[in-house]
Image (cartoon, rainbow, N blue to C red; front, side, top):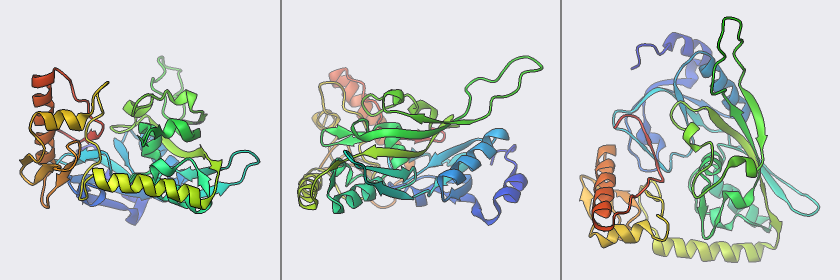
Length: 322
C-alpha cells in the first residue's frame, strides 16, 4: 500500500464504490494479476472524467482499465487507484450519407460491431471478435483482417491533463480540458497513437467517448463477412484465457512465425504456455501467474533476437512492477 494514498479522502469521495486490495485477476482476460491498492468503478463518461480530475487534482496515482485484454498486471499488483471503466452506453445515428455510432469508452467493442451488423451497417466486421473496450481500441489503434481503428474513427472525446505545470509564484495551474480529436489528430501508426504512452501508468490523456463512421449495407452481407472472419479466427487463434497477441508483427515478418521458428511453440513456463495453435498467443493453463507469462515473454524475445537479430516489441501493456 502506498503510504501517501489518502484512503480516508477516497472513502469519503467514493463511499462503497471504493474497493481495497482487489485482485486484478478478476478483471483481466488472462486471469492473472495481484491486488490493486484501491479500485473504483465508473458508469458513464462524465463519471470517468470527474473521477480522473478528482485524482489528478490530488496527485493520486491511478490507471484506467477497461475489458482487461492486452494487459499483463504484475503479481505485485497495482499501486494507487484503478478506475474500472464501465461507461458502456452507445447509440447508432442515422446520417444521410454515412451512418455512425457514438459510444462511451467502456463499451465492449465487439458488441458494438455485432449490433451494427443487425442493422446492416458495414465497417466494423473486423472488430466483432475483439474482447476489449472501445477506449483501448482507440488508444492502441486496434485492428484485424486488414482494417483498424484509423479506418473508422471520426472523432474521439479525450480528457487531457496539462503535461507541464506553470512556473513562477503567480502561475495558475492549467485545468484539465476535453478535446474533440479527429483521426488525423490521433497520430495513428501500427498499433499505436500519440496518446498510447500517456495512457496506462499515471495517464495524462483519457478517452471518454468516440464516434465511428460506418456505411449502409444489408444485414445479410455484413453477417456473411463477419462469419467469414469468425471462422478464420477460430481456425487460427486458440481458445482459453489469454491477453490476445503478445507482440507486434515486426516489419516484413510475423511474430508467431518467428517464435515458432526458434522452437518455442508449445513451450511452457509454470502454468503459462505459448499456444500450440498460434505462437503469438500465450495461454493460462489454469493457475498461471503474471511471472509465468513474463518469463515466456523474455524467453521469446531473447531467442528471436539471438537467431534472427529481430527485436520483438510488445503489443500488450505491462502494468505494475517487474
